[in-house]
Length: 117
Image 1 (cartoon, rainbow, N blue to C red):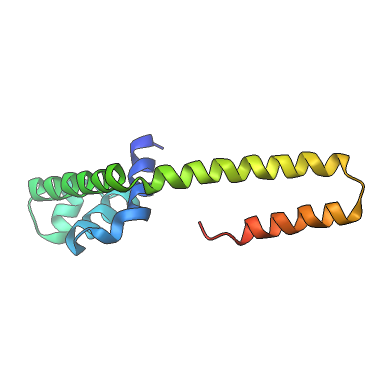
Image 2 (image 1 turned 60 degrees about the horizontal axis):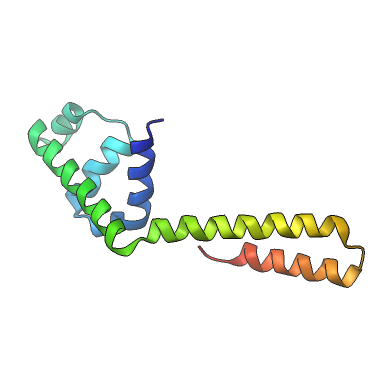
């Protein structure tokens, strides 16, 4: 899959609700339903150029919000930290025989699992 498609879908997950209804429809049809510009044009009864312009505007808006807010960047950084913590816990469990310490590590893992990211 094209990395631009993946990037756009991730941006849409974070910021898609900030688009207009028409932009959301066109975005979904193009990026999620794999419609061509011509198919979207026919479906929505607008020009192919209108579809293209709306799609490019939506992409630009999503990138703008990421540039300003950085939610995707922060999310990815937090997920990397969480994965490092998980690996550290797994490694520590190999060398710990104390049951209370193992329970504490299990509790930490449960807390990580409960995070709403």
